[in-house]
Every structure is written in C-alpha cells, then in structure tokens.
Image (tube, rainbow, N blue to C red; front, side):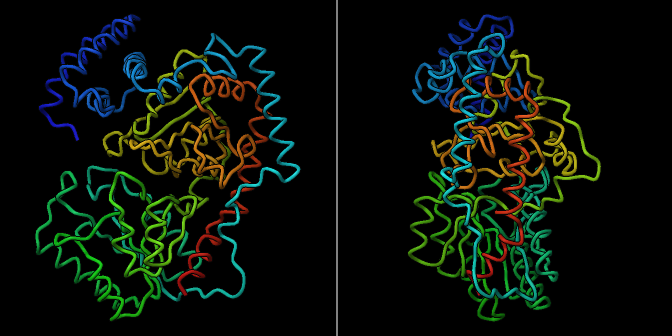
Length: 462
C-alpha cells in the first residue's frame, strides 16, 4: 500500500513523464520513469501509482509509456508487449494476412470442437447423481459493500448468492456482517469497537435462532481474530443450531494467507473459485470444492429489450491485473471503446443495473485475471460477459480452458498484438462474433446454471 509520502515524492516525476507522453515523446517519458524508479522505487515499482494519479480516467499515452518502460526489465511483460510471432505487430489496420490466419485458427478449433476433442476438462463440475436434499432454510453471512466500506461499491456476492439460492431454497435470508467479518485493522475507513463486534455476534445468533437454517454460507475471505468472528464462534453456533457451514473463499492463492486452512476444521465445505495449492492443502483438513465462478443470476444480465452494441470493446472495473495496460493499447487502433475504471469506489462506479447492461452495449468485453503474484486466476467478468451476450476477449489463463473452450466460447490472447488483431477481426465480422457469443451462452446455461451450482453444493454437505 502506497503512503501519502510515497505519492508526494512521486508527483514531480509522474507529471514530467506524463507531459512527455501526451506530447508523443514516449522514449523520453520512459527515461523519466527510469529516473523515478531510482529516486522513488516503492512508488514506481507498483502499478498502483497509476491509480493515484489517473483515478478513473485512462491516460493512454502515459500508461503505455509506464508499462513499456517496465517491459525492458520484466521478461513476462516484454512478451506481452512485443510483436507476436504468429500475427506480427500492431499495424494501422487488420491486414489480409492476419485475417486469413485468424480464419484458419477458428476453423481448426471448430473442427476439434465438432469431434469432441475440445471438451473442457471440468465442464462436468456440477454433475451429480442420485437424490439431493434441498435445505428448508438458508442464511448467507456476507458484507454488503466491498471491503465493508460504504465508500466502496455494493458487493455482488450478496446480490447473486441471495437471488440464486432463494430460487432453490425460498427461505433464504442475508445477514450483513459489516461489524463481523474481516480484520478491521487491515481495511481502510473501518472502525469497529468491541461493543460493535459483540452486538453483531448477538445479532447473528438471533438471526440463526429465528430462521433455523439448515445451511449457512459464510463469506470467509479472512482469518478470524479478536476483532472479528472466529471459527470458534462458528463452531459454537453450529453445535447450538445444527446447521451445515459452507465457507466461501473466492481469493485462495499466494501471496495472501491461506484462509481455507483456518476455516476448514469447522466447515462442511470450503468453496473457492481457484483450484490450486492452497485448496489442496485445505482438502487434507476437510471437504473442498473449486467452482468456476460466483453463482451469477442470469436474469441480472438480460433485459426484455434487446440492446444493440454501441461500441466495439468495453471494460468496467478496477485497473488491477494490468487491465489498464491492455485498455491503453486499444487506443488508436480504430476500435471504438468504452472504458470505466471504478476501482471499486462508489464515486466512480456505475449502478448495478448500469453495470449489468454495460456488457450488452459492447460487441466485446476485455478481461484479465493476472494477479500481482503472477498467478493467472479466473474472474467473474468472464461469465458476466458471456451471460450478457458480449464476446469475451480474455488474456489467456489455463484455468478458463478447464470450463470453456477457446475460440468456441471466448477468444484468448497472449499478447497485445493478438488482442488488437482479434478485436479488429470480430469488430469486422459480426457473424463470426455472434456464432461464438450464442454458442457460449448456450453452453454456460446448460453446464453452469445456478440450480446445478447449488445442487452440487447440497450434495456435498448433506
């Protein structure tokens, strides 16, 4: 986390680099960033610096200069930004050679799909057999806002979990844990007194006593402490009221703590959206499952009135995971874009209805799941785009291939030249874009429907 002192020291260097970049003097701008790294290493070695100075606005020239400077020292980033061995560099337009090669790629993958050779390995993740018990009542314990802060956007966890779980278990209620979850000392803008915590614990117990749930789903993306609910608190509630506990831990990868190890001893199921070493370690302590994403309610992403796409490519969300770099390199390519960096703050965010329709207003949705540690994770935006009828343009992650087929359900890219070439191609060929969009929508509706998600959960815990 950058401090105010870090930002103050970096301001002069950033402004010099910005003025050069917007004047078209990128080489000189990169030289200033080289000076800045020497003088303020903490600030300029962290892409968060762009969040502080650009906020919700994308300054394409400065962002490109910043990342291209670091590409000189970062082999992985250099591979993303240099010319593609397959499709070449980013020219003024889509070349006939690029177009022909993309056609051949699509034909090859479609041939494999038709023969069954491209079936995603985990597309049967929700398959269950035999009778499944559906709980009479369920309680979801989660925060209402991201980071439990009223400055941040409303969390989509409670929206989608409550809507989808209530479809199969009508007696589903939500208990908001703003004074219960996470360690408040690790969150900005949060104050929590011992009295607040005690009142929240008493409120949760009263809610459970009144609702008598058979199932409790806990947002467990943290390790309990004396300033939050703990696993001992949950064990006591389980013993008193007899419910099954699902600990939902979306973020389960290095370098953050392995929250699953903490919650596994008291949980009937640890549920995550990342299948890696952390989940494997937790599986030795209890039952675990890796699902492709949050259980989205498809109704949020559809509307009675069909919305015609207004732009070629959209991105709405945080600048994290190098998404600002990819967005910056779409500028000047002839593609129309709509970029909105919210950084999860209400001040910059769309309303949820606006967010849900933003995907439908674009032919393509850009996404990347590259975490700071180098781990390439699945993110919910992949499925949000598909549910909305927007073509997913996804920075390649092997994890997504476990659930969706490349060039059949989405379009993967390894580097910037590929991203631009594919985006130009599908902006030009609406029939090919719609073929993937329709096939992806049908596949997700068939394999990853909410009722199948919850049926698998129920099978695991009852």
